[in-house]
Image (cartoon, rainbow over all chains, first blue to last red; front, side, top):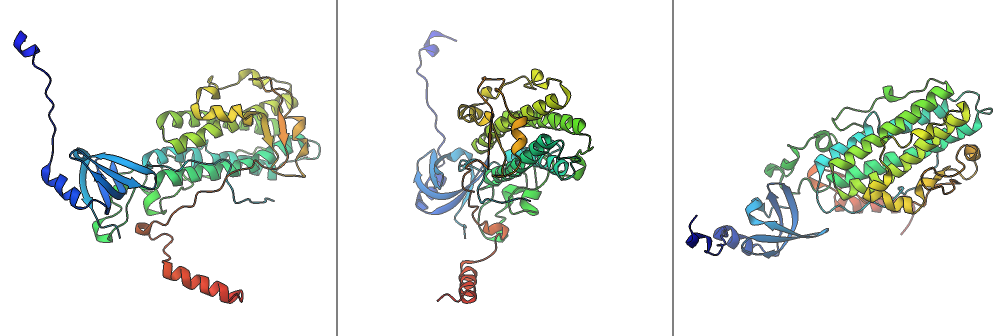
Length: 77
Length: 299
């Protein structure tokens, strides 16, 4: 590795899925089921950020990484 | 005979996430060979079938008192499992497979046979059997068996504790490690009275004190490890001929308590519409209420 390369500051890369983000924003405030790679969570979507969603359940707020979401449904009847 | 109270031994925390696979592991502590159903039924049948109980009353009283406590342990482990499974599936249109997350869980009985609740089975789904009951009728043999059974139960609890950090499971295990320790010591003392052999010198087995377990410590600080409950106000008083002296760990005096621990309210398990349980709609509920009122002549 040459000296030029070691002096370069670290770069941050963020994966944003713009359509997922926009769709999630459109259902903010709704009751939903979020299927993650670790199972499902059911609750109200109370916040949407480019990389995570805030889901409110009786037990409190869950901050779910969008990268770990498989699907979301509003079919909770 | 037994009296029943609508309470469980200790409060359990409300879970914030579903943990069905850990609940399957906890099933071992309910319906496994060394689970609470085994301790309950061993002592229950030994107390029912006890010979010459007038002469050996302290031993009869001990086994009978512990039987009643074991009922509460079965209940506590069951409620732990119920709380841990909660939230695994979600509500939704049946055609959208709202129970799809259950298909890959370790145990299917929880989701197909039951409405996501405990069953009398072990961690591999093998159902509890009466063959786990040992009741030779020989007092020393039965006491020795109980001593071994409690030690086995304790080992299994320690291992399940190490398998999961689920807060509901750990609260229950912390408490039952302390209570199991009381029962091991009680049977060791009974064996000493009847045979002269001091089994307490071997304790604890495995050689790890309850103090190592975060959720057991507060119960020991409260003195739970020194108390033996009679679960009766009037009967089984001769337990104090065996449960007496000082606790080998801290030297504090052992005490026999008339009646039961104060206990805590039971969790109110919510309906799970996707399992059709309880399957009574709010409209049905109103009709039931109406019929009950009419039956009781209440306007």
